[in-house]
Image (cartoon, rainbow, N blue to C red):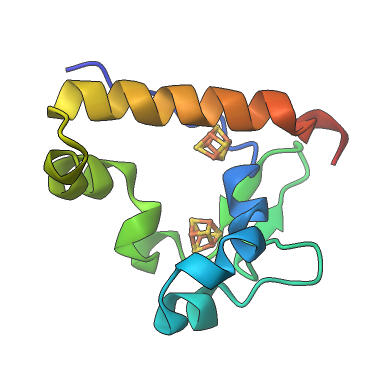
Length: 102
Ligand code: SF4
Ligand code: SF4
């Protein structure tokens, strides 16, 4: 199984505010995005990468392995294809958002 390595650019976590209308209220309350749309739990580190300050307790939807294992079938995909799709979505998101300048 080929997964993908998160580069900790924080781009996906900066977007949750734009998804708020499609996610359950409880999740929205956890993310509680700021005015820019970034999750309240995202912190920038001195080396320019980001960390989730509730990483060990982050919601399931933030856990790629969980999403792959539990949601691949609903997309009609096997787990490898779901990992590939996740990696592709990550790449597109990073390309669309100049994460190095934020
Ligand atoms: S956009 Fe991709 S590389 Fe960046 S934090 Fe999210 S999963 Fe990791
Ligand atoms: S809870 Fe953590 S992993 Fe999930 S969106 Fe917020 S910062 Fe990102």
